[in-house]
Amino acid sequence: RLGVVERLRHAEPGALEAELMRLEPGISELYAKAIASLYRAAADGAFQAVLRAEPGFPAAVAALPNIKVETLVVAADPALDAALGAEVAERIGSQLQHGRVLTIPGARHAVHASKPREFARAVREFLEL
Image 1 (cartoon, rainbow, N blue to C red):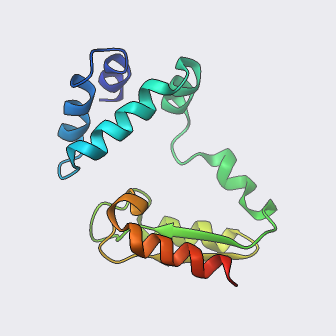
Image 2: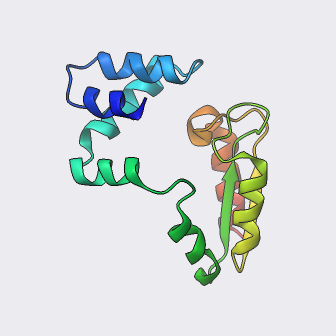
């Protein structure tokens, strides 16, 4: 599945967007275009490294306890298509020294795109702490 996405990164516009929409039913064409644009802009080596990365990004997870600043983890609605899921979001939040998890009801994986007002409000409130 990801091999197809990798191959389509260099195809004419339209093919990658269609594949992304096929893989993620319910995403809009605009969102697929935005993601495709990011995929195309990524350096080949970086993109391939992400595809080869060990599931769960264990090195990043191991570094979480070293983060000393207040950190907001914004999670999608687990009843929809939260990529991390509620359990993982809570685990990430609990490993941060000053972590806080906020789940936005009705938000999809791209929380900022699916619920922009709620996302902006959450970030604003967090920054005002």
